[in-house]
Image (cartoon, rainbow, N blue to C red; front, side, top):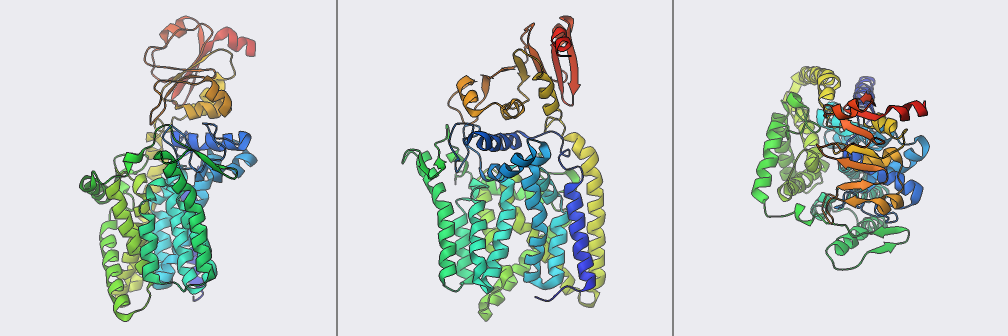
Length: 517
């Protein structure tokens, strides 16, 4: 491919800078606190690092048994070296997702340039770098949100591998790893890869065979996992790795039962650019900014046109590979009950399609293309600036309760004191496991669940912790971590000391605090 001109290099590095700034500024504190899935992924990683087992005592599982109904394992494995180096901190927990989010911007450039030349690459990189959906995705550690970046790199190396087959094994590696990032994509991955191979028809050689073997080697443990959890075989191990049976599998989450209803819900989310969940959707700014829909339609029309031309002229067009990705993504939204993070498989190719639509508009503008590019870039930068201001003020403030701001400090103070720790249900148990560094064996030896088995296990008691409901029990030697606004007058009247951290109030006997002091 042609080298970038000086102006193009300046634009490219400006895009990288803005993309990095939007993801790095106040990283680890915005959003404030920690989501429960982030916490469980981190605890599983910590447990594997220190004990070599997950929270249910399975050694190096291919799929985590978290919550009882399971959790994708890849992010916890990616966290391991960072936790070993830096310890358990919010920014460390979120670091793998950040790095993948940052690397996705140059990946988008490489892919866009392959589709439509340098201008197309810059359009694609700019859209992904500055779009709210991808900025939100990069700043916190929901494990399924690793899938879009891995799939993006898989396509980059697939396109490169069609020219130089040495890159095909890398493509297979990224596609295989994506299976460990988001289990919902398992049913549609054969369709996606089959259609890509059918259209691209890569040359059959030893590297293509090696790629198939890599993909098969990564997929087979998960096939075994399905067999175990459908009752076809017992739990087993593959070398150091285990294939566990979940307490309760969520096998009904992927189903044809609500096909039309799920499609309607997905269409509503795309039209509104919001699923109503504020940790997924930044309000009025949408997922790709409000003006994205016309560009998406224009990009889709361009893809269909290029498919027809490529079939008629019997030549390969890499941009056409977006169509099977979009098609598989639409099918997936019909099989599952969707929100923004559950349809992330579709949102990445949609972002690339929007960028292609913008580039197509500039091409159609002819000699006015440079003026159009300047106008589009100005509009994108203005939207981005307004979004950034909103994100770091009102939006972040609105997430304080959702991410339980102050949880770590509150539990840290509580654990400085002796006695039973009574905890609000607002603090999910992986946060307690993390804060107290409870070993998996100690957790399993002491835990008593509200209900067992269940898809979402809810402990009542484990280690030093006791969960309490609206009626807070009185224990003169106890320590309390409660949601701000809980009625604590009885504890105050009994002489308990009181400290506030974000969303929480910590109460403990004064004499305990004085003795510690």
